Length: 245
View 1 (cartoon, rainbow, N blue to C red):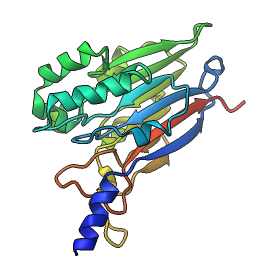
View 2 (view 1 turned 180 degrees about the vertical axis):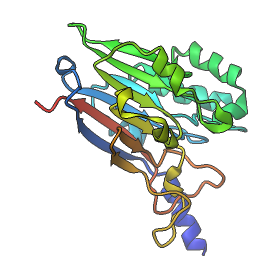
View 3 (view 1 turned 60 degrees about the vertical axis):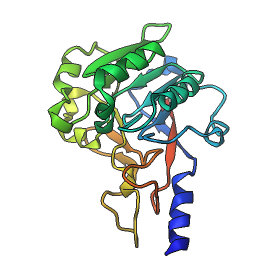
View 4 (view 1 turned 30 degrees about the vertical axis):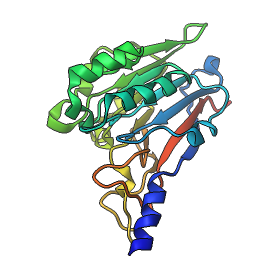
């Protein structure tokens, strides 16, 4: 049992970087290869140099998929992580359920201080030189019914490619084909965090190509409850978006 605990402690500190090359017919050719660093569920962890050393030299933006922090985490540690991430590329953020524990206004003030774009049931547009657009939609966490995908869609400009960021992957159940959302990225489940004999509270994180959108569910970078992992590797992601041609 002691050996198993030590193994799980070690697994919780690993730094897997999972790479996804994603082709979409609707992705604007003028963007070429658009590279995103996606990290979710940091919780109490400090972002490791071992993770940063795996990153490609050119990244277009960073997306934090919620649970940047939780109750009891010193704000100094959160700020250290933000200082690391903002050196990589501009940051976009959505709230996770644990983020509210430290005070929504207080966390927002810190994020704004570091130039982070907060997507609270809102959108942000990235334009290419020829005018083609990629629209980022972000919803607040689904706990307490804070998510309002309808508001994000209502105020979303007509873009060539839509990417939805939601901490909780269950947002997929609200997405319609007519919403023209190509990709959803999320976390929250930790891949079950501790999986025994292949079983866990949640399914292991992976990329799903579904009817109404493609959705990436991350195992997350940190842990919640206990600082242990087994069978659901701690991970962050590189997403390279491109047109098929």
